[in-house]
Image (cartoon, rainbow over all chains, first blue to last red; front, side, top):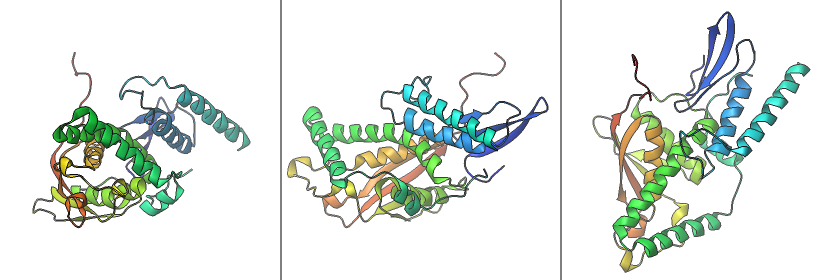
Length: 87
Length: 186
């Protein structure tokens, strides 16, 4: 847990820890069992603020159907997988 | 990776991508001129600028939260300081100051000595009553609403009307608790 406005929570779910990153306006959580997710979750939040919120045609609270967001999200996750293997 | 601490407005501003400031000023001026042509009434233009600002503010708040890593503000005083010192610096490159607190701590003024929106602008006589920078009041109102604060924002001083600075009065009306889109027990 940190003191910042965006909160990382580590929650015990069925004996495996899931990481949750949330701000006052948004929330994301990882699948249980994955570790060291904080950086990736924060990065995904930044991708959301860029590709979703800055898209003038995206309506707030509608499901995100932004191609650029999906593309960058996949890339970020792939990069994280590669980094994980390297650890 | 451990979470990073809060960043100063200067540090964030130094790291953002740049655009020509005059392009920004000209674009905003073109918007205001077009609104005046389309709507004709100065009051309507003020309202529309505020609405545009509101639509920007509700999106901008997440950008702010993502980039600034500020800690949760304990009271409205801290919120106002954060808006003035980090928010305005990050997005407009200007540092604002907070003054004129009321006894409750729910109303204050944010003062801007400098404002890139109004470079080279002079208001003609036909536009008296226009709040040229009204988009800024909408931005602040929208951003605060997304973090559960309902506010009322008015211009106290406006350099385009002959005052010596821009002064925005920010009044906290209420803290709105989170509402859920579904009801329990249904």
